[in-house]
Length: 230
Length: 394
Image 1: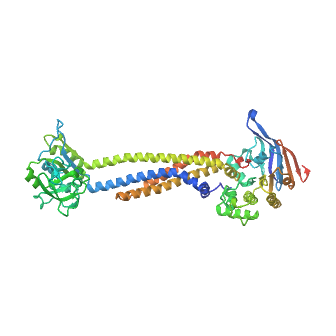
Image 2: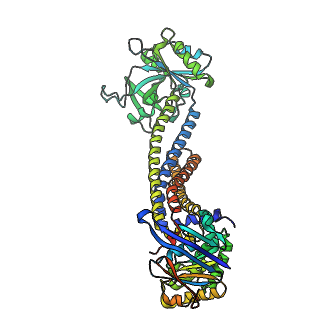
Image 3: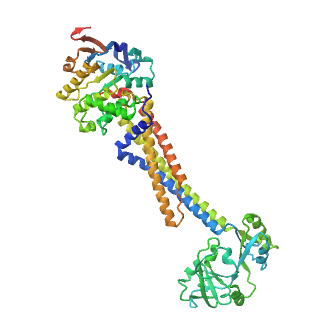
């Protein structure tokens, strides 16, 4: 089953002579259960690609389909609700709210789906236990290590059981051990059936993913599955 | 799919910015608090003082008309005919009329005070029923009565007593009036409706006739009239008092003067209210300022919330709620301070304490409006932060 499909996606910033095209007609399909690394040097367009896959940005031309629905015509409000319901995001800098507990941070992942507070807290506690932080529910980000913060962020991204989990350099701010722990968490989630896309420039991170998409100059340079070209 | 966070969640979201930055929230709400304090305080005070004035007027009555000589056509001081008191008393709508009669004498503390020092105190003979007609209260001693009528006895107005340094009457105080000693038998409280009596030494009519003759002209006729006929009677009194020259009679209503004074106080109220409004405006600008800064600082949070599914409207409402809560906080603090101020002042002045419901509600409404209006622009800016902000590398 196809989760996410990009058809001829182009993204141009600015107009006229100052126009800068970052993506040139990208075609990409993410299947249910995919575990994909998107790699490429700085400026290759991989962050823009993630923005568009995550419906945070709209393509200048081309189409994005999520579970078969064309997102191009969606209003901002509808797009936002769809994003909240079907996608989960993990950021390089975690972006947790300071001074709020892990539980509150994770329950914010359900806030915009209109889930009532007691239910939010219950499911957030479940998600935190799932990432191995059942004993840290009331800790604020300041009281947690970087690796623990990223696991809280992962819990926030999956608390609403999204169709696709999108991660932007999830290990970029972590030491090797913490980074490995987060990746191992992704492995477990993938084994349980989650669809995960990881943006990274770290070869060792990409090496453990069964599918690697390489970007260069705004185009998909290669798309390999278990070492076999697709 | 259900539509976004409920009202309780929205409130909680709005309060988030305040609880996580308490110091800043407190300071930015301060301006509004000061403005609302001033407004509630001033309105509450004027309400209390008005209530006090109404109590006073209720107690003193608004049906007193004061008839006094005006000026003749040459601009000279006129006099009232001797018969005027009797004539006025005959008007059907007049309930009581009492006059004071000018006595050409000066009053001094002792006979040793030189003649040229008159201390500005007038001497008048008080007709019967004067105390009742002007609602005069005695601070000490008693009013001139049948027992003292024929003796040199005097009742002093409050200012007169102070100028003559008359303290306690227990030890038999005397003053030098005209050419002889008079015993001070009473001292008046200030007479609100006839303040001229405060500076007067009043003697009995019988003594006055004995010493100064029986043709003393009436100075002022204090007239209590039917409460429903005040205006009609007022028009009649000039002609009644001096049928040959009605235009030389001046008729006034002292309760009007009290109300006019209260109206004058109101212009001061308006001024202070204006200052309160300026403080409120400055407070409003302060909140707008803090909110704009807050939006700039929290672009990342906004981006993350958009990624978590917040709509533009959802983000806008979070910041609008925050601004309204901030302003309401100021309004609440201001309301409490304003009420405290009013109560303290009213108690200090011996007025009845009136809880200023209307100013408090108006103050809260004001702060609600202020918060919504100044929150609009920051909310719009917050709503326009693109969701890609969440992923922009630092």
